[in-house]
Structures are given as C-alpha cells and as structure tokens.
Image 1 (cartoon, rainbow, N blue to C red):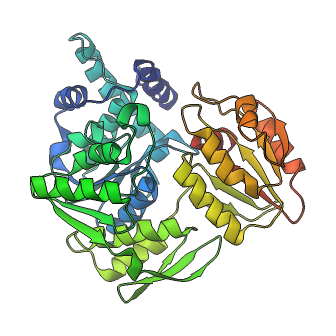
Image 2 (cartoon, rainbow, N blue to C red; image 1 turned 90 degrees about the vertical axis):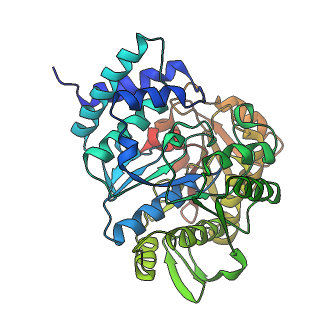
Length: 416
C-alpha cells in the first residue's frame, strides 16, 4: 500500500531519533541510491545565522518572476510541513511528498543494511532534490540547515551564486563559540569558480573569514554596500527603500530586512536573464510567514519566530519604532538557545508576558523563562499548553495594545 502524507511526515520525524550528525557521507550515499538528482539542477545556496529564510524566499520569487521554474527548500515550517519544499511559491502537494518520501525511505532501508543511517534533515533534503528534479525545475534555492561546510545541502555541485547572510553566535556547541569559527563553517559552502555575496554590514570577524576563504579557493566575493541603501518609508506592513538608483517596495518590516534585500539584489544580478524589473517584482511579492508578520484584528498581532539574540535585537528595534506601549508577549523558546539574552532584549518593551512550552522535546519550561526575567517590572503568567496560553494572552491584551507571539517557529506552528 502506498505511503500516505501522514505516514510520510511521521517517518521523517522518526529519524530525529538519530540526532544531528554533520557530514556529507550519508547524504552522498543516499543521493547515489536515488540517481544523484542534484547533478541535474542549478542552484542558489544560502547560509548564515539570521536572514536565510527571507533571503531564500526573495531570491526564489525573483527567479519565478524571470520565468524560471524555481524550487525552494527551506526550514522550519510554520503552518504545514509542506512549506519546506516549494515550487514557484506553491507547497509540495501532500500526495507528492508521500511519493518522494516513500522512495527516500526505500533507499534509506538499503543503506541501513550497510550501517549507514541518514538523519531527518538528510532525508528531507534528499526528498526535496528528488522532487525538484522530477518536476524539471530550472533552479533550486537551498537554505542551509545548520552551518554550511558539513550541512547536507552542501552536497550540491557549484551553485550559480551563494549568499552568506548575517553571521552571529548560534548553535555554538556544534559550530564553535566564536563568530570567526562559525563564519568558517558558513564559508564552507563557497566553491571554486563560483560567486559569493554578502553585505558590508556583515560582522567584521566573519567578513575577514569570508574574504580569506574566497581568495584561497578563487571564489568571487561581492560585498554589497549597505550604506548605499536609504529607507524612504516604513510601517509594520512594508519598507520602501532606494538602492543603486532604484526604489524597492519590500513587504517586510525591520531594517535588517533591507540588509537582506540588498544582498538579494546583488545576488540576483549574477543570475542569467534576470532583469531589474524581475528583481523589483520578486522583492515586492515576497511573503514570509512568521517573521515579524503583522495581522490586523482585535487585538492586532505580530508573529516572529526568531530565537537568538540578534533576532531579539531586530525585534526590539521594530517594537520601539512601531509598536504601542501596551504590548503583551506570548513567549516560547527552545532550551538550547540563549533564552536569557533574548528575553532581556525583548521583554523590557512589554507590559505583560505569558510563558508557554512549544510541543517540542527541546522546549524550555515556562518556569525557566520566568526566572530569566524576574528582575523586570512585568505582569507574568505561565501556561504549559500553547492554545491555553494564547487565550490567556488575548485576555490580557488591552484594546489599544499589541499581542506579540515570539521566540520559536515551533510555537507558531503549535498555535496556527
């Protein structure tokens, strides 16, 4: 009997038991069993600590505008697992996910007999590449899952262009405890003869690593001059900015998104048959779920799944500029993140905080989060169940206030 969508998702999630194991040997063996679909595709490759999702989505929209059939592989998802694999901004149909996962499972079972045990991320990477090949995509935009050098997406041949977004401290137990060490892992996606784009706002230590790596392997490095960008107007719904003599309308909030967009513009210029109008239209049509996503209503709500200190700083900047004084925050975080720094950055701008626990074994308990802000003059509540926590947060959001849901994409997925 053919695999169902639910069975496919359950199977992929079952591989989480094998943890995160950096390296390319398992994904290489898996793709070999599947006919090496990556060798029949052209790629745009995105690595970095923050901004990967926005950058990947903008570039896929631009390629679509240019008439290319464009695959997008990204993570995490907010509303549906199928969001992780898209073609021309359309999620993979559930029946197609089941079909490609069934083929991936059969290949993994053969490899298991050879003591090769692929991980969850390797399985979904293989499924995406197989789907993109079978659907005859012209391009695939791949967002790195973790790091870069040993991430399963790095099994691809040399991409048309790669982008290194903002690099900061995250996943330090795996990638290293300095920005330079982490940047070296991200720089692992650079390939000889290819092109890499970053921006002048990149961390100085990280930029030095990128420059050294690019020079060593003869990869062209383009540093987009962020000081050439000027914000013309901004609201919670959109940002209008000028760059290189052109005006762009970006339906995302936050000055960090202008940094992402500038990198996207320079990367898109490296792609064949992409016009200036394609770039403008692609940026204008970008939709990002759960990344400072604003929704009008009673109460108005702002959703942000960013989870590390840099994300917290970007969110705090947006709140200071646009949000009312009466903010109620509904917060859930993973325990392996720097929860205290994130909370101490965001919650001083809030009046009330409700702490909850996303349905994930890595989630921090509400009580741990509460202790991290015991010094702040907040009205606080704890509620383990995310749905109950949302009702509680709504009750404590004033008529002229804002309900902020933040800290984890897993929390957004649980709620919506």
